[in-house]
Every structure is written in structure tokens, then in C-alpha cells.
Image (cartoon, rainbow, N blue to C red):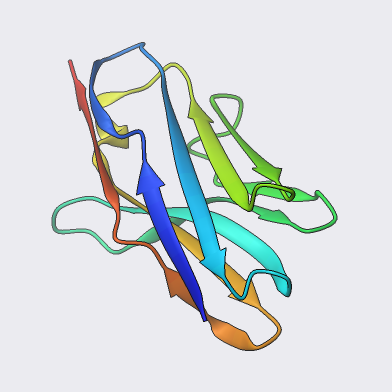
Length: 117
């Protein structure tokens, strides 16, 4: 199995930036997809961005041109650089990894991001 630990959340004013980090440990060699999801109060969890082992990325329309996902395979880390933050970006952000031996994925515990107006 894979264990994921997120960090980097916090309180920031609108227009500011935060960088989230996710550290993976355990059986990491077969991870082929990592992603960031978020869940705001009263809303469903949604995919924000993902990155495949080959480097291809996906972004939700709401974060395109503001967020950047990146991955350091050597360190088993994935990052989410968030710029031009908006109050509607306020949510708990979760890291998820999917591997060939755990296709349903593993989740981190989440990190709170709060953007004040």
C-alpha cells in the first residue's frame, strides 16, 4: 500500500499563493497517476489536477492558468502550486495516488486551504 501525507495548506488572502506538497511512502514504484482533489463544505469532492508518470497533466477548468501540478519521482513527491487564489478555492485539499496494485487509489488525510476576501 501507499501512504500519502499532505502539507502546505493555510490561510491566505485573495490573490495570494500557496504550494501544497504530498509525500508518498510505501509501495510507490507502481504509482502511475497522482492527483489533487478538493472538497468544500457541503460540496462533493472534485478533481483539481492530476499528473501521470509520463508527465501529462489535467486541470479542472476552474483552476487552469492559476494552478500547476508537478511531480518529483525520485523523491516520491507531488506538488500543487496555487496562484491568484480566490475565496472559492477554499476547501480541504486531498492527494490521491493510483498504482497498478491499488487501482482504487490511496488518499491522504487532507490539508485545509482558506482564502479570505
